[in-house]
Length: 296
Ligand code: 13P
Image 1: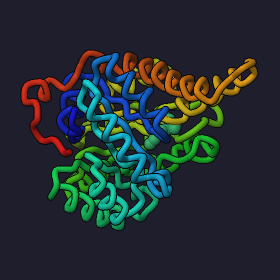
Image 2: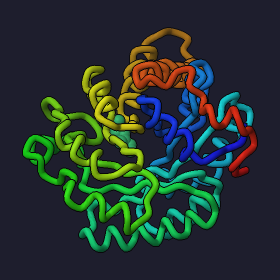
Image 3: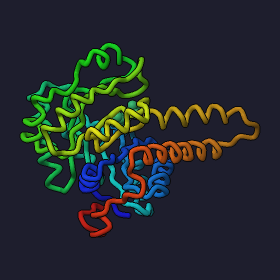
Image 4: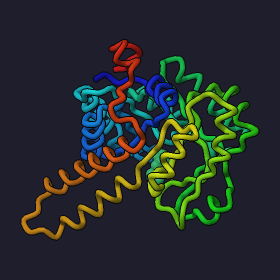
């Protein structure tokens, strides 16, 4: 199907009390597995590309592959730049056909984060692209004890309303105790903080750093108002572990490993899609108005 902004599907998820998974891809094998999972589970396909992969020489070819694969996928697809590092990078992503962009100004001082996010929103809105921003900072799991466990960098609920109103951002990533990558120690989610944020703004809230959380933590985050969850590390690590295991087999070929990578993405993504409650929920508004608000 054609590519479409995730905005309406996320609103539907928020209203329906489930969450959309965003899975980050790296290459065609990961992309194939991700799309197969969404198709099998009849859910809105949502795929992301990290800013650092967007800077690789093959990025345009990678994006062209994702878009071509999306065209033959039997569910609507949204493609988001994940952790866009600058206004310029977000605009380049939009020009390559991304339907949604995240601008990550979470390490900037508040006023600078607001100013930059506002600029990205203005450019994106002109061409129907939705924008995610981050308030507070979701750090790295390998440093979890020095920030997450101490609640450092968490989203300040007192500024959430102002941030949303001044930037006009469509979705907000919040720092409530998650981290990217492998957690050092146990992750703890601050659900009271999530409630406080939820009470202050209407826009869909996003949780980064999905890998390493328990099923119960995912469920309670969704119950407390998270509508989008990013998952990456688990997909790449589980694939790598399985590929290393398979590498010991005799007569192994490159094709076996490529297939195993796709299949692992398909299986792990399918697991999260079920867990987040989005299986079978292909955007009802999309079904009602096929072809609307598409970007080709
Ligand atoms: P993990 O790699 O920890 O799952 O986090 C993914 C993420 O938040 C991408 O934006």
